[in-house]
Image 1 (cartoon, one colour):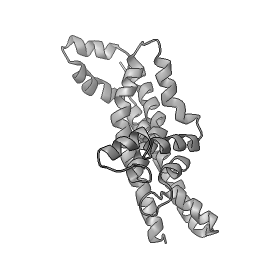
Image 2 (tube, one colour; image 1 turned 90 degrees about the vertical axis):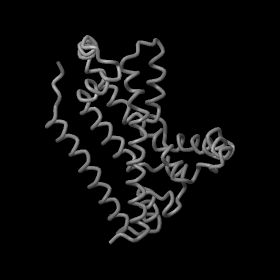
Image 3 (cartoon, rainbow, N blue to C red; image 1 turned 135 degrees about the vertical axis):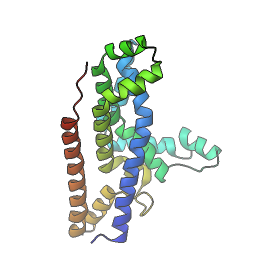
Image 4 (spheres, rainbow, N blue to C red; image 1 turned 30 degrees about the vertical axis):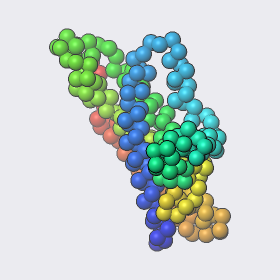
Length: 226
């Protein structure tokens, strides 16, 4: 049986993953669309910035985000000026850090899905007097649904397993910033291997189930592009 503290860590992790995916869809969808359509000569610079979390150690990302979210940082200073206090060691801070760290896992699948659509469906829709916004919602979104599914699953699953970034930004406050990966580390550090096994098994089964679901759904709802 999970202890109340472990249950809180599991619930916080699922909530963090869900909120992070929603934030990344709002941010990542227009960014991925622009990257897939733009012919700007320096587009590679933006693509490199988006992919940066793939190669940077999580502790490096967490350290600089901690500075940015702290009382002397630009984001933390702005938050204090607005009367919201600093964002470090808060759930909001975890969402910001997780969004940055999981950004490529959402943007890259969406960019790939948008790129495979091509321009012909959009040109056909334009000849029918569809506005750019209508084209996006009525043509692009249905054709890119597998890309959205992949982005949602990868972003959610990646956030579930975060450790370094969330530890640097949020610390280890039970019920506030302690996620399941940090709870596992705590159990191992105190030689509570049975509890660590249980939490690790839950995370393993959950991640495997999510990934299996996306593979099955991608095959079942494969999109044939015109």
